[in-house]
Structure formats: structure tokens, C-alpha cells
Length: 247
Image: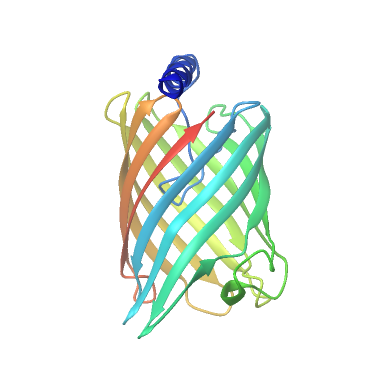
């Protein structure tokens, strides 16, 4: 009974506090990151499971991918990415932890007129912080500039530009995302998005996706999304489900 009472008190405290804060803003489920910074002193977790069908008999499942964030102040957040994956190629399956990424998000500017709300995100891949089958050879950076325009009380237009390295080859892969978000109600949101990756020495691949979010409280959100490849060298399709919370 004591444990139940304690849990009830903690839950009510969390729920009541969540009503006093702005609704949570997350970097999932789309590929476009938000320029919003986690509120100072708050810890935010964004996690999800995805199931992706690649070409031929090749699947990649993420079980799960988690972004851990902490708001240092109104202009800066710390970030950690952990990702457990299972890859099936033909009749062989390999599972384990991808290299961990650590980094930060820095606010660049607020939205003003045609100038978007802008932040910079940077991470560094730690090559040996991974399962043996997924270790990389080198430390590798990734970065992107994230921008957002408010079109109305219900609609936003966002886009990201950046590049990433895989820790194995020296070539960069350039990244772009373009998305439009629309809020049906205070609880239900949606988005549609185009995104792509352009390796230095290979053809770019492009995909389209969309999804919905449901805000249970200002500090807890559920999401569901799915996407398809547009070009022949992109993954065939994927589906993902996840949740995010902050304390």
C-alpha cells in the first residue's frame, strides 16, 4: 500500500507540474530536428522502435533508438544518442549497439519576420562505444542547422541542412530535410516530409514520410510514423512507433 501511495503521489506531482510547462517539443518522429531547446534543468528522453525494409532480402530494425537530452540553459542542451539495431542480410542476422554519439544543441536565433528560428546541432561518434560487430575505425562528427517558420497557429514549415561521417571512410554524406507540421487539435499533430542523403562518391537517395503525434500531457507524447523510398537506391519502406517524456 505504501508503494502504491508513493507512486500515486509521484504521478500526480508529475501530471500537475506538466500542466504548468509548455508542451514538449521533440526531434522525433520525423527526420527533421526541432530548433527548440529542452527547458533549463529538465531531462528529456525520446525513444522509439523502427522496422525498415531495404532492397532485396535486407532489413534493419532499431530496438530501440533513444535520444537523451538535458537543458543546461535556454540556449544550450546536452545530447546523447544510443541505438540498438538488428540487421538481416540474406540468411544472416547481426544485432548490437551502434556507436554512441554525444553532442549538443545551441540556439542561434529566434524567429523574426522571414528569418527562421534556428539552432545548431553537433555530435561526435565514439568508435569503441559499441558492440564488437558495430565498432567504427575513427571518431566521426555530424552536424546540421535546423530552421523553423511559424505559418499559423496550427502550421509550421521546417528544414535541416547538414552532413555526417560514418567513422569508417573519410567521405561525408550531406543531409537535407523539409517538413510541414499541422496541429489538428491541442493534442493531435501531424507532419509530411521529404528527406535525403547525398554521399560524396555515390548517388543521392530520397524518401518521403509522414506521421502523427498525440500529447498525453505537456510532458509526455506518443508518435507513429511511416515512410517510403522515392529513388531506387533508398530503403523500400519503414514504420516506427515511439514516445517521449521529460522530467
